[in-house]
Image (cartoon, rainbow, N blue to C red; front, side, top):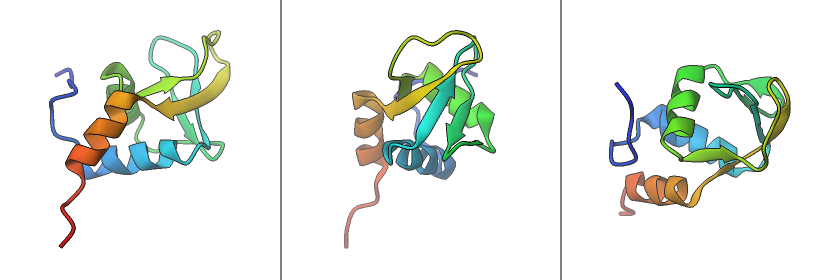
Length: 89
Protein backbone atom coordinates (compact mmCIF):
# COMPACT_ATOMS: atom_id res chain seq x y z
CA UNK A 1 0.00 0.00 0.00
CA UNK A 2 1.43 3.35 -1.03
CA UNK A 3 1.56 6.05 1.64
CA UNK A 4 0.22 9.49 0.82
CA UNK A 5 0.86 12.72 2.63
CA UNK A 6 -2.64 12.57 4.17
CA UNK A 7 -1.95 9.24 5.93
CA UNK A 8 -1.07 9.65 9.61
CA UNK A 9 2.61 9.45 10.45
CA UNK A 10 3.79 6.65 12.69
CA UNK A 11 6.06 7.34 15.63
CA UNK A 12 8.97 6.00 13.62
CA UNK A 13 8.07 8.26 10.67
CA UNK A 14 8.14 11.27 12.98
CA UNK A 15 11.48 10.18 14.48
CA UNK A 16 13.01 9.82 11.00
CA UNK A 17 11.71 13.23 9.92
CA UNK A 18 13.16 14.82 13.08
CA UNK A 19 16.50 13.08 12.45
CA UNK A 20 16.60 14.28 8.83
CA UNK A 21 15.75 17.80 10.01
CA UNK A 22 18.98 17.90 12.08
CA UNK A 23 20.91 18.24 8.82
CA UNK A 24 23.08 15.12 9.04
CA UNK A 25 21.04 12.86 6.74
CA UNK A 26 21.93 11.62 3.26
CA UNK A 27 20.08 9.76 0.52
CA UNK A 28 21.69 7.43 -2.00
CA UNK A 29 20.85 7.52 -5.68
CA UNK A 30 18.65 4.79 -7.11
CA UNK A 31 15.06 3.74 -7.71
CA UNK A 32 14.54 3.38 -3.94
CA UNK A 33 16.88 5.83 -2.20
CA UNK A 34 18.47 4.54 0.98
CA UNK A 35 18.64 6.88 3.95
CA UNK A 36 21.74 7.41 6.06
CA UNK A 37 21.66 9.23 9.40
CA UNK A 38 24.98 10.45 10.79
CA UNK A 39 26.74 8.31 8.17
CA UNK A 40 24.97 5.07 9.13
CA UNK A 41 22.16 3.35 7.28
CA UNK A 42 18.73 3.92 8.80
CA UNK A 43 17.41 0.70 10.37
CA UNK A 44 14.00 1.11 8.71
CA UNK A 45 14.61 1.60 5.01
CA UNK A 46 10.98 0.72 4.26
CA UNK A 47 9.83 3.75 6.27
CA UNK A 48 12.50 5.91 4.61
CA UNK A 49 11.30 4.79 1.17
CA UNK A 50 7.68 5.62 2.09
CA UNK A 51 8.68 9.09 3.30
CA UNK A 52 10.66 9.73 0.10
CA UNK A 53 7.83 8.48 -2.15
CA UNK A 54 5.34 10.65 -0.24
CA UNK A 55 7.58 13.68 -0.83
CA UNK A 56 8.27 14.26 2.86
CA UNK A 57 12.06 13.89 2.50
CA UNK A 58 14.11 14.61 -0.59
CA UNK A 59 17.69 14.87 -1.83
CA UNK A 60 19.20 18.34 -2.14
CA UNK A 61 20.53 17.57 -5.64
CA UNK A 62 20.29 15.04 -8.46
CA UNK A 63 22.47 12.08 -7.58
CA UNK A 64 23.93 9.26 -9.64
CA UNK A 65 23.05 5.70 -8.65
CA UNK A 66 24.94 4.73 -5.50
CA UNK A 67 26.16 8.26 -4.72
CA UNK A 68 25.21 10.01 -1.48
CA UNK A 69 23.77 13.51 -1.29
CA UNK A 70 22.37 15.53 1.61
CA UNK A 71 18.71 14.92 2.47
CA UNK A 72 16.18 17.45 3.73
CA UNK A 73 12.68 17.45 5.11
CA UNK A 74 10.46 19.06 2.49
CA UNK A 75 7.86 21.74 3.20
CA UNK A 76 5.21 18.99 3.07
CA UNK A 77 7.26 16.96 5.55
CA UNK A 78 7.50 19.88 7.95
CA UNK A 79 3.74 20.44 7.73
CA UNK A 80 3.07 16.74 8.37
CA UNK A 81 5.47 16.75 11.31
CA UNK A 82 3.83 19.83 12.84
CA UNK A 83 0.34 18.37 12.30
CA UNK A 84 1.37 15.12 14.00
CA UNK A 85 2.93 16.84 17.02
CA UNK A 86 0.98 16.35 20.24
CA UNK A 87 -0.64 19.49 21.60
CA UNK A 88 1.22 21.12 24.47
CA UNK A 89 -0.57 20.85 27.79
